Length: 209
Image (cartoon, rainbow, N blue to C red; front, side, top):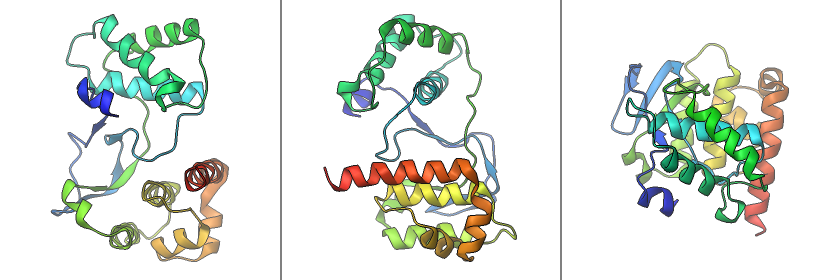
């Protein structure tokens, strides 16, 4: 992360056109959600697949795009650093020829926004003063305003638990969203179940490392 910061690589950005439904000193809340929030390396989970690596590179290229294509050398340098297993971002080794093609594919995307997860609650810098329970309580209350629990709501809570170094459980998700565990099971879906297992495996690795 220090290398990215020293090289002024932008890897996070809040929404720029979507207007929050509610805004306070601590957070912005989007009742309908926003796709414009990009926040890479928010949790300690690492990149485990080629598909995920390419998405991360697409986001970095997009966020650092200033109207003109990046010099190939600049973006290639950043991509190679992130793709190097020794630097701690990925869990696998990638052949340089494959990475080279991936870099070219990303550059050709230009300023097209990468597909992104929807977010409803975005905490501001001042929220760092909140305790974990306070942050999770805010997320639960805001998302709980919805009449129906969605997969996006569940994912939002999963990410908040993981980024705060907490194991994700059905009971914790139900408590945050003020609903029953049965509701969580019913609305979770196979993709979120797999994501939950993956994030918890990463959590366990950190606990026993």
